[in-house]
Length: 154
Image (cartoon, rainbow, N blue to C red; front, top):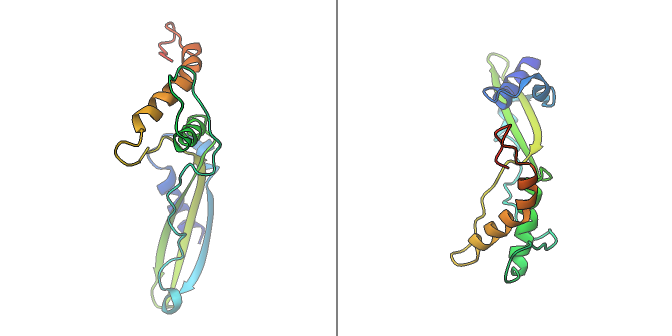
């Protein structure tokens, strides 16, 4: 049974070049189920995250204030940039056990910091302004991390 879980885990790790430390943080489990009672696998409802739960923030250098929803989006985008927003990945590996009518299911899960995202909003709602505010809010930190000797632009 552990092999089924490890096969699922391999899909989360393979090709990422992240090494053994990353692989050790993947959770693996498995279960047996009768084929006749299986149906579709249990999955969580897909949820598109938004910025409603975030506080409003501002960026130095903006001539005009952001709208409330833009200020919340800026806060969420800064949290993503700072690695404070988590993303849950899940892979499954299913194996039919012929002759006994069972299915062995392995599952691997990993919670990681979200890397990037999509700022999706209606036309004319200020996506460019929010992006400029994000750049302005991180510009001093980027400048302080700049190193010509090490080839880092910020």
